[in-house]
Image (cartoon, rainbow, N blue to C red; front, side):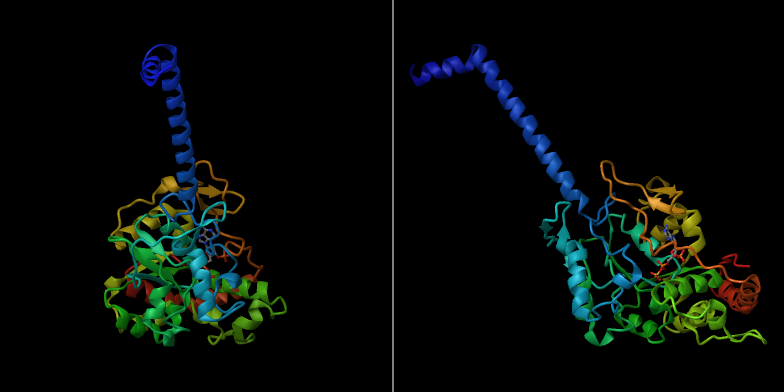
Length: 358
Ligand SMILES: Nc1ncnc2c1ncn2[C@@H]1O[C@H](COP(=O)(O)OS(=O)(=O)O)[C@@H](OP(=O)(O)O)[C@H]1O
């Protein structure tokens, strides 16, 4: 049979119908394959509905913080690269390079407070498509300032026009030099402070320390300088961090109050969507992260992010967040409440917000 005859047979009759069917089936197969590949890829992107597959976010503090195992800034950089969008890993561990956009210095920083709920806030913020944040804590303005701004910038994820670069290092809030250093980077920086009842915060801080060093003395023997007189030991960092008014005074020497947002650590647990609304407004972002993104996980006892459809990846924070606290005698807690009361009132006055810590 000549070519023209083949063509004629192909364009008419059962052969034509068969070939159309096979083209149709091939296209369905290709689309399905493409869709599958794309959704696998998307899961590795820090986009609105997905988190990094191997995120340092939820790793225990000791593994996440610089200094726990390998304190060199270079090791942080290496870990950043494996955690950040620039060194993405897809669900089947294939590295995907993201060379879009450029690395910028952060426009917004979560500066504190330690054990306030800073990790939860960052995790929730990273759901927003216009937020790109470093997973680990860079500690640039307290520990590695001598590395210079270019080193700091190199840690940042790449951002596109309109996206905000962020990082969180809760120790900045209590670092004397941090406000002046951040101001010299940018007077326009937006500063977010997650605050929590200083008594609960102190117990949370102690819980973390004792989990790493079980031989530590009891909370009360560390909290008091003199148990008979009830004199509080303000040199203990677990106590000192909670004197928020004192630390804020230092910051206000360099930044006006309008550059700060104070997030309630308590409301971040009871009403995460409400607090996230305030944070997104402050950052000038569209309110993308809403109550649709959260559910209350009974086992964890905390709000978690809803899983994207088809993913089994847990979206609660890791085991080091929301740990049970040791029982502290009520008279010790009462004494601490008395101690913090005047500082809390001063803090409410300075911020114009009543956080309701009794
Ligand atoms: N959604 C959610 N899931 C788990 N944990 C949550 C959440 N929201 C706030 N928190 C509270 O965050 C506390 C830890 O605070 P930080 O993340 O700032 O700690 S750290 O400074 O980074 O170590 C942690 O303190 P502990 O309860 O003492 O472990 C939590 O109470």
